[in-house]
Length: 99
Length: 392
Image 1 (cartoon, rainbow over the protein chains, first blue to last red):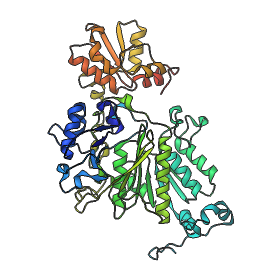
Image 2: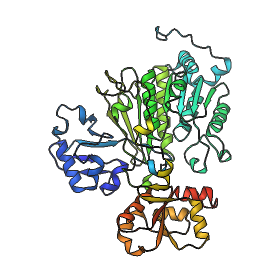
Image 3: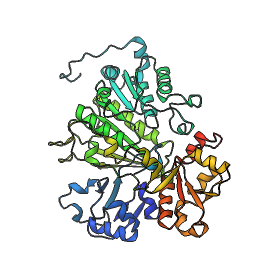
Image 4: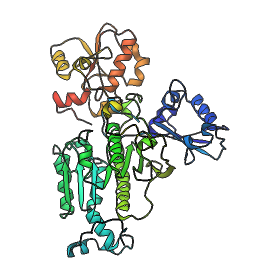
């Protein structure tokens, strides 16, 4: 399946806008992704392994949080997974520049 | 005809207005009544910057009767690459005055309400209450959560837009039936999780794209036409020029718009976003790193003190402006420690002090004992020491 990487996270994914992984569920796809790009792990998950509150995951156009089986939902090669972090642009001091 | 639940009588259009808005009047979706609705409408634009510029411009052109603007900033040369409401001659002027002048020139019938302030928990409800729709053009998380919560508390739609580099988001939040920003993102990201401020920046055209999408949504809400972006998050990728759409749902556990809200009044949004007010003590030493001011550094360099000024920005930034420091981009520092003498005093700097603080902490962890951080970075240097150093 295709995983879309948002701009702020691309530096931790080899600069790529999307990455193909082979997986049977949403969580397996994320594991495959963080295995190829370990730097992403800290940006997506808390140290306890929970998805960070300011990162949303969409399977096609549906929020994974609202799928009946959540991240255990089965996926096919034709599905897309989008990582959507909160963003704020413009001119903001270094200290506060975040997603 | 207008929905019968609305008791307001719509203002008549003058002869000049009939001529001015003729291309609207012949659209069945706008027509006479729609144009009168626009004339009666009161819209608040939070921010007169990248998003606010096209947003306010098009709303003024479209015949929106009252436009409120909230901004406290002054026009800087680096704004002009995207904030098209301001001109070169406006550098140094209040954005509010510059924007109001352009809007009034475009449409003299427009009533511009200027709020020269930072939107805060203390004034937000008072400012927002006089408007029908709020358009959020802010570039920071504390204000974004503040606008969201205030809109939910007052029951006013929040037309949202946000940008980062080549990517944008837009949606309509806080309507009677739809989700709010907190349904999408219950919490802001903690400060400093993204390590590099060199990742900032924005394609100048992008706020134009996203701001015009916001303006379109505002107009549709006023007219009651079409399908507003309620419950949908529009994603704009300007590099790929792709528009995608995601479904948004109202979060039943949303702390502000859910059935059992825990946020029932405006809170301290700086604190909520993890931004602590700096005390004097923290300013002088941050995370164990002494903070040196640009004036102090200048004095010490003039006095001939032996210290190394280490610039940890990217080479392209160095090319734009530098203060003759030794350039080692932040990501190269770990591999190039051999070039840095542990016995010599090192002052680390970057653009405004964030990256250099992290590198100073890294050096301290690696046995460097005489490391300090240049507070405010090269921007402070340009402001306070040498105006010939370009700001970017």
